[in-house]
Length: 137
Image (cartoon, rainbow, N blue to C red):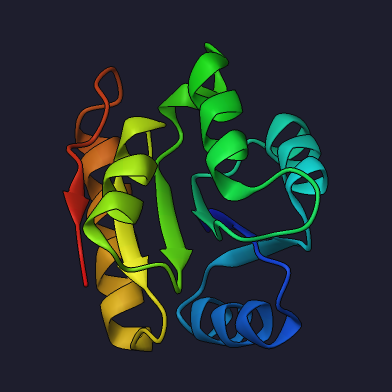
């Protein structure tokens, strides 16, 4: 069964790169260009994993992360922060709002796929527990 990944990022070129990488590997990809649209898609489609940028107009990625974490259904969806912000304080802020991993731009497609596959496999093997968090740089 194909897994569905939601990418929430205001940069069209990043969404396109992610979509091409994930579709080539057999994933279904949903895209949102801002936080409110991403939250609506997460609620309606319940993706298997969310890739989330921090710096976006309107609702930023940290607020989206907090909102997802506060929802009893959506809080089980692993979220990978995919952002250019790479300071320790940025990573800490992402992990504090419930993001399970932090991948800094620029990133390699292979690294992204490995991280996604790890979280999806972990979620399949332990559906009642949240995957462990780990930052990546």
